Each structure stands twice: as structure tokens, then as C-alpha cells.
Amino acid sequence: MEPLTWRVRLADDNPSRLLPIALAALVAGAVGIALGHSIVFGIVGVAAIAASTSEYWLGVTCTLSPDGATVRAGPSVSAIAWPDVRRVIVNDAGVTLSPLPGDSRLTPFRGVYLRAGRMGTERLVRAIGEFGGDSVRRLV
Image (cartoon, rainbow, N blue to C red):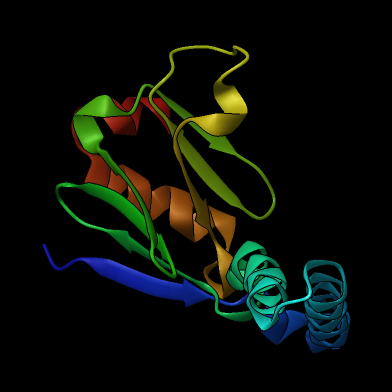
């Protein structure tokens, strides 16, 4: 089975938010230079804003394969193998594949969140069922 790969870039749906992000990065850079008296602190300020908002302006690449699900956002990679999926949490924007069997304090921090994007959540859930095998198919 051929892997299914798609890209979701949040800025495509709302490009007007790119200006506030750019302004915040410039302000962080100016504050870094002013308080740190060094261009290095300015670069760190800009880099911090750019890195924390990269999912918005760079986007994420999601892949479903026979082995599992992977999400790449810049240098960050999150992956989960199908046998490790214990729960499938569906919302309007995507699906979380969680290794936790139930709700806990760790729920928001564990698992792989797949943004549906233009594909739509229903189609994404069907694809997860196709790729995930019998154990994941029962969860969907």
C-alpha cells in the first residue's frame, strides 16, 4: 500500500495572521537587542517567535503508511506505530492517535495529532482505518 502524504499550512486559510507574527518577531528582536545590547539576543528573539509559530507559516506534513503515522513540522518529527495506538480522538480539525488507553494529565502531550486540512476529518478517519490494521480499525 502506497503511503498517503498531505500538507496543511494554516496560513493558507488565514494569511492575515502572518503580519502579526512578523511584527511580534520584529518586536522580540528589538527587545532582545535593547535589553541584551547584542545582535545575538535580537536573533534569538526572532528565532524564538519564528520557531514557535512555524506550524502556522511553514505548515506540517502528515504521512500515513503501513508502519504508522508521522507528522513533520520543520525539524520536529512526531511518529507513532500502529500497534502503539490505543485511542483515536477525533475533532473538527483532525485526529489524535494516542498511546494512552484513557484520559489522563498526559493526554494533551502524548500522541500524534494529524491535521485534516482540506482532506476533511471523515476522509482522514477512513484512511486511518485502512492503514491502521485491525486493532486501529476497531478504535475508529
